[in-house]
Length: 82
Image 1: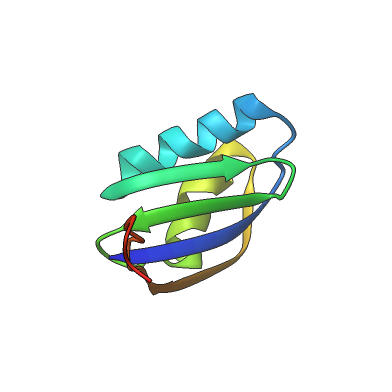
Image 2: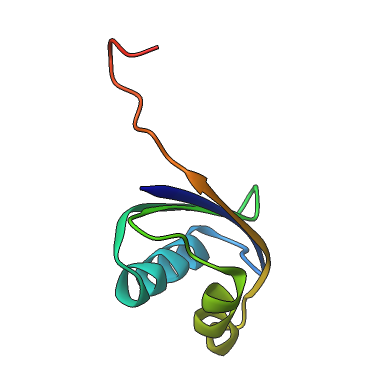
């Protein structure tokens, strides 16, 4: 599993967050996606890393831009794991 944190330019409200989350779910095989217009950030948990170019391709038609995207291996934190 991978966690991708993307900086997104153009989000202004919670509807923007919803539009971006919906696009990510449609284009990528994700386990979880959350966006924050206050942080200008989208966090994606997926089986494969998501690249800046892949995100930009989906976002550009919507009027948003991916400024950067960083992927790293993701290990789910359990209740009793340290």
